Structure formats: C-alpha cells, structure tokens
Image (cartoon, rainbow, N blue to C red; front, top):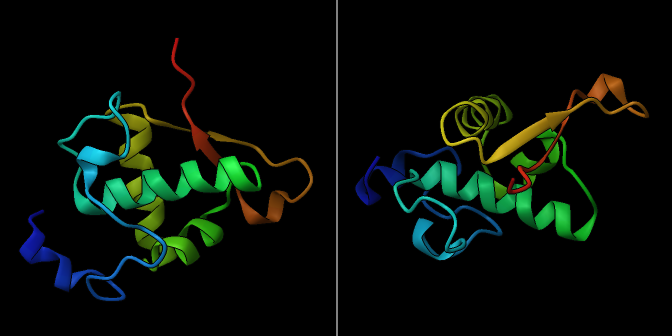
Amino acid sequence: MTDADDADLPGGSDLTGVSGDAADIGPSVDANLTTEQAAVFRAVSELESSVGPGHVTEIARVTGLDPGRVEEVLEELIGGPGLVVAATDPWHPELGPRYQVQSPD
C-alpha cells in the first residue's frame, strides 16, 4: 500500500487518533508496515498503555477503520511480524479477544 492508497481507506486518509508513519512507531518495529498495519499497531499500543488491551471495536474506533478490516490487519500483525498477540477476555467473551503488543523475548 502506498500513501496514494490512503484515500481508499475506510474513513478516508485521516486515521483518527493516529499520526506519523510506520517509521516513527518505534525503533524495534519494522518500517515496512503498511499504513493500515502501522495505524492498527499504534492503536493497540496506545490502548494498552492507557486502558489495557483493546477489543476490535475499540481499535476500530481509534483508527477509524472498519472493524472487519481491523480484524484482518490484526491477523497480519499476529502472523507475519508477530507484533501483536490476542488473549481471551474472561470478563467479556462476547466481545472477542483483546489485543496487545507482543512482549520482546
């Protein structure tokens, strides 16, 4: 995905609550993340540091992306670079898993 593709993102090119590009989300994060991956990773990180691990709906609200697309991007971040992990939410299982940043080994 290129910056030109940003206009095709749900909610337009303004990913609400997300600023900067993939290169400034942290030195340990691969700068080759797509715009959506960087936005979702940043939202997971910000939610985790402020209120704890977030559900898809919370991540979608922060990024301005469709919840279905957030789920797809989360799977990309879990599988490929392994930047995010999912955990069962025992208090609200109906909301699905909660997502947090993968701890470094």
